[in-house]
Image 1 (cartoon, rainbow, N blue to C red):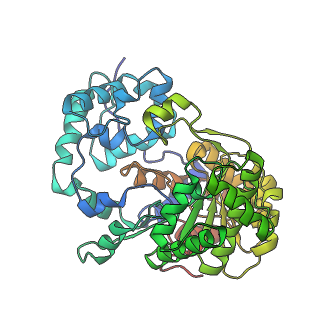
Image 2 (tube, rainbow, N blue to C red):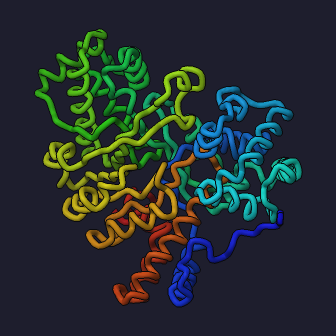
Length: 476
């Protein structure tokens, strides 16, 4: 029996028990219409500067979203057939990719990707049918027709989604021209801020390390021929970002080791890396030292430091060589924070101007390491579940794992971490429903007063991330 009609259930993700669900409905009602504050994401700011209409449903929903492409790839679909690494698709190819999604749509049942896309289909595009091979062309045409209308251009959707703050992720050598253009545009009311992402500049084992150091020096107007110059260039670029609205830096390496070297040893190893003759052990030691340097700079300049380590990047070499990074071939690994961060936290963990947000894809460390660290150090916050675990069950596990130790105020607030622009409101809505679910359960079990839960519901979605990430409107 087939029924193509579908509308997302208004009580999705809320508790099954009717009495608890009633409490969750009240709490969610306090959160649902709050504006979106997105302190960590990957939307290209040029999209908002140019305000060019989205080309087609495929370029909006499929190609930029590695959550979507990786599962299709796992089912045998070529990434090239989804537009990955190809540039703008011709209409026939875009429609063919959409039909492939429809053909495999059943494989997304129960996944957050399907939850988000069904939210987008209904709430953004007014669709009340299930995507199937039989409805694929109809839904494609419906979305394409909407995308041609002015109210579906990027800026109009930005306003429709009630986004107040959107953080992007940017290379340290970027001139931030797009951010300047948005800040100077009287017709754009939102706040779009850059994020300083220096990962590749802190990896001395890279074959292009010298070229990266040169690029950093050129952007900063500093000679990076030695360690002192490199450090000065990093400091200058961080300040440049801060002066252009940045509130955080973003770091992801294989681990969170932060052991410092003697300054003379750091200078010696930097020279070897610059010359392409550093061995793996020394490259690892220098990278850990350079990450510790970033923490010292953060204590000085006030950029919130976010760490999300332990991902095996580009697991399949051939895929990386053909399509590049960020196409779904990254795999989580295990991580420990306590020992790796001990040097950093003993150095600046109690510094008044320092803030550190710890994200992980290894759920085993939520209650064992991250919550206890955030429960002692005033500078440390437990980052929200992201990437592979920004999913309903994982988010509830996170709340249960950390709340008994640190409550809600020592957590980061939700981050959407997305390149898929239209998924931003869907992801934030999911988070709000799940926070309502968890808070309602505590109230129903008489572990929290309804007044306290209501107060949290009023502040968690928008005010709390402003405070943690020192955004305008948040208390420091």
